[in-house]
Length: 159
Image (cartoon, rainbow, N blue to C red; front, top):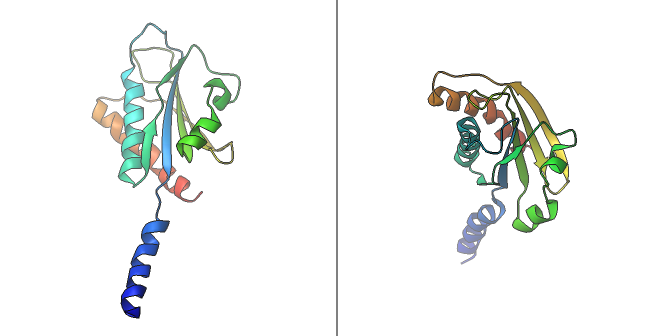
């Protein structure tokens, strides 16, 4: 009887303590007209984020894409009107933001800024800017985006 109880406790404890973090993604486009339709590069970035983190065992969600006329001159969290209290209420642990800065709607973004916002601490804990690239195909673009995003998985796990 004691042995069965010990096995049950040892099996149940890891299950209870192995909660996955809830991560939400926010793609923000700058430099595009409001009238232009959904940008395929933005969709590729959003999908790459979702795939990489989901495949790594995270619970993922996304905010609707936001389009700003120009690069914000205030912190990105302020520029997007993000509400920390809503994220906390929803159980979101981290917000990963990809700010895609465009000069031409038909081309890839000129620059991509990646941010990790830790909701409970109300702060950006990671920031990186990378130059945009044009690709021969969406498949090539997706593979490169996933390679760029993959190191963020380990970064978030170590937080």
